[in-house]
Length: 224
Image (cartoon, rainbow, N blue to C red):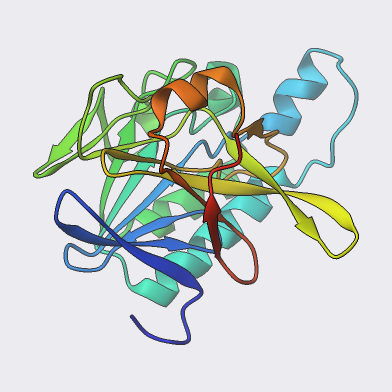
């Protein structure tokens, strides 16, 4: 791996992958960049339901980060793993400037929207919508299935708490074992589910790692 790239290299089902500090997953051999849980339009959905204001630039900031990852790695394929939009109304309400930005990011690439619980596939935003995407020997799906192997998924927005000096710090994290990797949420303003949550403990093997995102990816035993 290029030493200038902030990431943690690992192998899943014999495939060499890189967990990036941004929260994206990079498959160098295939030129695939995978992101989970973009939740585009979150601030619009929050405002619509009157749950309190959020800054209205969450979609812009998420797309800025995604554009930087695509440029850095020259990805040929992009896989968006479920919950790409905060809900269907948020997808419909996406401003034209942001629709045009997504179209620009899609140009010259294969783009796959893997459908999540809240989004059935934005048919008017280009790309291909699928329930899941097998790319042997891996399977890309929105949510992990017990007993699966070679699985890449999202949905849970995993995070992990670690000591940083004299205080505890929580960071979004990949969860990794020999069967699967669960990606952190890529979108701005997405809350995390602690790795010690019972659902995540049940999905991940005892030897699982948490790969903490940020300026330097840090691998630790998955906090339980």
